[in-house]
Amino acid sequence: MDRRLIVHFAFVAALAVGASSCSSTSFSFSRTSDSGLTNVDELLTRIEKVQVESLVAKERARAAYDTLLASVSPEFSGSAVTQYAELEKAIDVSQRQAKSLAETIPALKASAASVFERWTRDLESFGNTRMRQRSQERMEATREHYELIVRQALASQVSFEALNADLKDHALFLEHDFNAESAAMIYDDVAALEARVAELDGRLDAAIQSSKRYIASRALRGEVELAEEQPAPPKPGKGQRRKAKQPPAEQTPPAAPVSPKLAAADDTDGTD
Image (cartoon, rainbow, N blue to C red; front, top):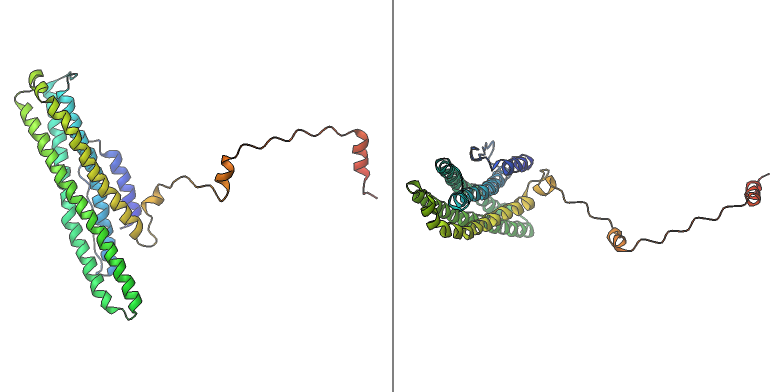
């Protein structure tokens, strides 16, 4: 799958995550052959899916928490029935996103197994010992990076599900007792959940960044990587940065006017 499509999709997903009616992200795969590169490309796509689902998870979790906090805030005004319906919806969306994130992991592991089993088997086909050693070192580095993403995704999943469970419990507490007194009773508990949300953000960010680095370093030749879709400002050429820090040069004063005689002499100088 072309990296450009995934990058564009990630950008669109980032814009759409605020809409609770959006369905969870989905990817489709069609393997036309069982070549090593086909397996590698599928693994890249699976890792991109982890990246996108983690990005959406951050927004879903934050939206659910913010809705709960607004519900128990002393400044709340409006319809309790409408607010509670919004709270239930936000938590439901967050729970469904946690499920989508969890579903990326088994598929990721299965895809990685195909890559590393094939790669390990093909190491025996090398006739050049040095090339075989190089390939094995690359495989081990790739596997280590992949395993880091799996650990981070699993940690994010556990943290996300635990947060959703707490949000659900607070909503259940309010379902039959949503008034000023009950809201004040749990306000401090809800405010304390901010630290849990921040912790989840950190775990998800770690998985997102690891996924980006994996894709940037292992995307197939000819595919556009994420960094190329969002280019950094061009760096100054050699010597330009040093010149930019120097004070501006003094301006040369305008030349004195030339007398008519000197001008006439210049016109006739060197002419036949």
